[in-house]
Length: 361
Image (cartoon, rainbow, N blue to C red):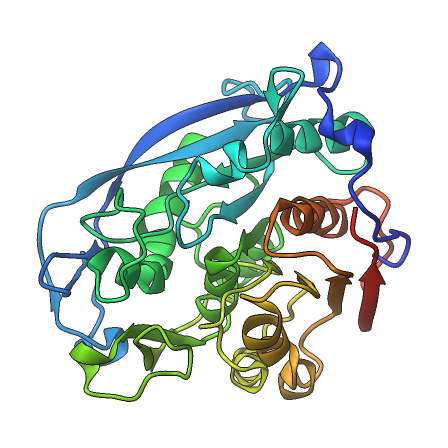
């Protein structure tokens, strides 16, 4: 990773790659057995205790959800000898699976974020990979994009880890040619699999990447938990800590992570407790971001590395000078995160902490 310079996304990478390097975007439907129902209970087909979930767990029918899957140029479902890494790319609180696509706009009749993937691959900077853009609300009303801090749709953000572990990742790894295979659970298989998966997200998706991966807190409205709010002035308060997903992901990115991200000392303590090396943690934010900079980014960064006790190999803290809560930051985050996580020119990982200030693009 030491051979890669962190930069703004080159303007030419926002334009379409040559035809032969353009990937394919597919919308797919999969079954979800782990979600929040209308009674605020966790529907699950797993042996998850109410104590772990922080609420009653029940059995019920599965629901169908949609996600987008980016497949690189040359992907052949029949060629089982060619395997791919996967990144799960998460949206924000008011967004959905369309946000990363339409939010960053279009150039040359293609989505800018897909152009970035295509150009990174075409120029040999990263290995061809699969990118999954899911709906981050694990709730019966997952299509509701409104911000309602009392709503089950918002609560669903804080339970996406169960859907990811038990529904979405198994679906992806059963239907696409991935290196990782979650069905293989021997210790050596877990160690191998996590090196071929990455998770990152913008705003609320950045919070999910941190809290759900590193044992941060779930949140619910204080009306339902008889507790105190977290100081975010939105009615939400902490409930229980997540079990973490360090066994699933070795590469984690958070772009302008939302204020409900847990404190760095909490996240780092869980990393140290799991004793699974995080190959890359990439956090970025704009210094003019009135939503995420102080309440989200700074609180999550402070004390994280110290609490992790050496279990983070490469920790990048990248600030964008005068940038706000927008795709200038988020596209830059995804571009650099992929180069570091799955780059072809990275050096062998060594303990490394990098703090940078980039100019606004």
